[in-house]
Length: 336
Ligand code: AHG
Ligand code: MN
Ligand code: MN
Ligand code: MN
Image 1 (cartoon, rainbow, N blue to C red):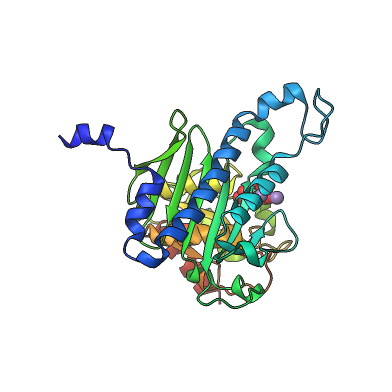
Image 2 (spheres, protein in one colour):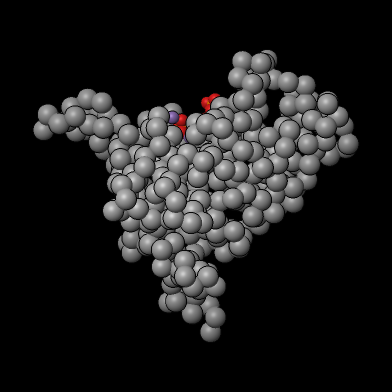
């Protein structure tokens, strides 16, 4: 019976991606190997995050533990683990991390065809109070074997071949797209494997939740202010939306993906480009949301059409359910 089969026929993330990649047989092995190194990084961060409270018993981040050893901050530690895992995969050539000012160019002997942009620990302000945090990543593929350079990563998000995030929440969930829809996998701690739990995720066409840091409202521009006002005081007879804001992009986007609604990090008078980084926050999330049937908009254009000029560039972002993003797009169009 199908129900029985589900319990014994475990679809691990590796098996899933191998099946999916069998369409492009030549890349199959390389991509799967790359992904397994990303997955290893996620498992490490998951276990480190779960021990974060416990670690306080033996020494705070930045302080020394009982052995007199320096404790690394969790975001720095996570970054090191990801960089080392990605370099050792032998499948990467350029790595861009939120934690490193400069990109990492992989030495020729360990070089591969993929570039990975990532935020090893997103939502770091939430670490010390046990609120959900995450890892975000995007993957570009080099077409030929030229000497890697910055242009290889300063590409629009639509050129990514895959993107994903891992949410360290009440459970550890990895959401991935290789450009053919979105799938979610949950870590089974007893197996140490990510198992397919959310096949073919689609974002609801319209949602009942908006997610934004309203503390910045005094500096908002007209369309953002008008949109949020409409969420609270709808004029079309619909019910007001609920406000949910964790302050960890991964958690806020994951909820938006599953429940529908809109996530906003607008530009404002103080920060015209908002806060979130194009390469490793905006692009991967925009890629996933579009693959799930939603939209991602910068206030001017489709987010995935942006061409970043710098690796740590920022952009305003409005993403979520198709109909909700359509409304904010109309407000920005009307303001032009
Ligand atoms: P990071 O922890 O990687 O520096 O990113 C934090 C980001 C993101 O997770 C979140 O959406 C946003 O900061 C929240 O910013 P505000 O505190 O300004 O709302
Ligand atoms: Mn971040
Ligand atoms: Mn971060
Ligand atoms: Mn940071």
